[in-house]
Length: 105
Image (tube, rainbow, N blue to C red; front, top):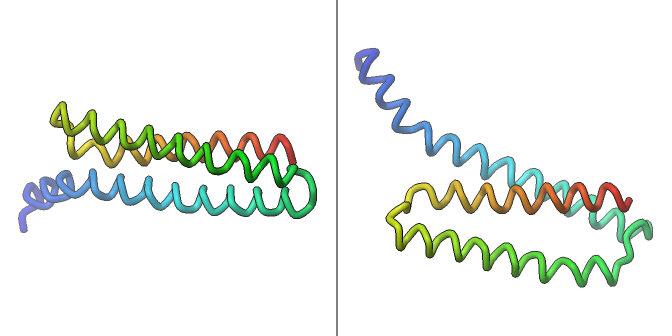
């Protein structure tokens, strides 16, 4: 493979690598939030009933927003960028949760 062909191949593969890295970060950040949440509820730093009541609406809201992004992408022909948009949406939500839980605990 020539250097130019290899560079072209790397450029083609880059979006998948970026998506994989963002998804991996989302998984790690999500696990950290789960740990913080469980620790806070177990130690009493977070009111367990209130926190449990927040979890379901948060997840349903994020799911509804993700559905909106997918539907909008299907209607506008932005299919490949949709996965990146959804991962970005969930990472924002996870970050907001981490900040909120860290402040409370």
